Length: 207
Ligand SMILES: [Cu+2]
Image (cartoon, rainbow, N blue to C red; front, side, top):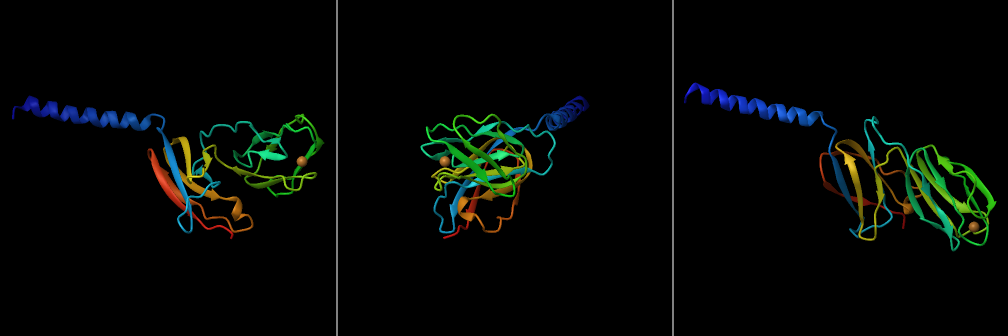
């Protein structure tokens, strides 16, 4: 083989290596992580709160405001997952007044008997599960799962939770379900996100 051709081939390989290196230096590509949640018997499980907590916290977006309204003497949504530091508004869209409170360690607060929208949101500044109630209406209940990540979702009736725009990298996959209240936490499991991927999880619940 003439020498010039060998040099050309070699040059092409160097170019390829250079392209791969430049690719590694670009911002990590975002992926969609799909979680399929089931119970011990393999039935699809809704209301599973799934969070991907990054192992290295650099470059995490700031928490965005959220809302839990009261309508027909019900909290909407009944289950929320929010990033630590999220300010949540509690607009009362009923004609009766509500008195929203939590005794949970992650956030103790009360919004005394009110109508309309309280002046200030409540900032959920510690990770953990917060159970909300209303002093007037005993049946009203809601859960706020506060997690150290913006990448989270809640499974629907088909058991599927989809988390979009997850940067490639290493995470801890955390799971929670309202019927696990009072049970020990599910141990988080390591998950490497390298591209669009699907994870199957099983959750034991209280009977
Ligand atoms: Cu109420």
